Length: 242
Ligand code: 6PG
Figure 1 (cartoon, rainbow, N blue to C red):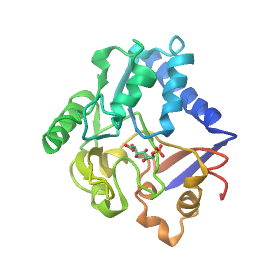
Figure 2: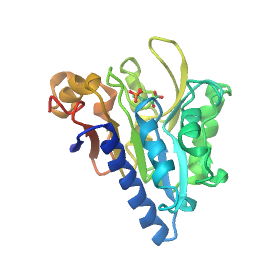
Figure 3: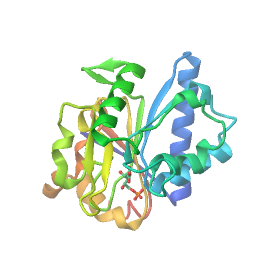
Figure 4: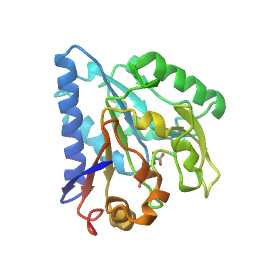
């Protein structure tokens, strides 16, 4: 795989770079009278991006041409403080930017195994397919301090290669169940972009980008776009050891 590193001074300018990427992709798709199919991650890092999109891109992006999906979701209700959908709603979706029918949340409140199967069915209905998997135009990933991405944790590396496109994962510390895209659908995307900020990620990121021997144990080192390229959008703190 090939890593493309994009580094910025701070989390705000890093989020803005990703906002500009999404805007450009949405405009291109709109010009082709097509939808932009994008899957977003949760956690704390993308909050800045979603707020920026809501505050500064509401009227400059053809949101009617965007279909929004999730990379993963905690198995909680959408109003729970830990809900990825809930975070995205509070930061962005509370504004009528994207038509409700184009927002496809993972239903964390439902039985995990059933929801994983339902969501995979939704993806197969909504997205074009290639290599037997649905194709996202853009998958936006984060990375945990332990090198996990999506909800694929270092102790569940099998989720990188299972046949399902959507599976049930378990947070190794809390035991919280998660619904998550798996390695095969992530690696089938047109573009995979990591948005990673903060000094807490710097060491693991160094090991991944320099392809250290230990890097293979990190799920974030095992996913890239179908082109073999993974784009990393980093602030200076996360990139400090590169
Ligand atoms: C989640 C995310 C997860 C996240 C990383 C980084 O549900 O938590 O999808 O993969 O991207 O844990 O989280 P932070 O942005 O909070 O560091």
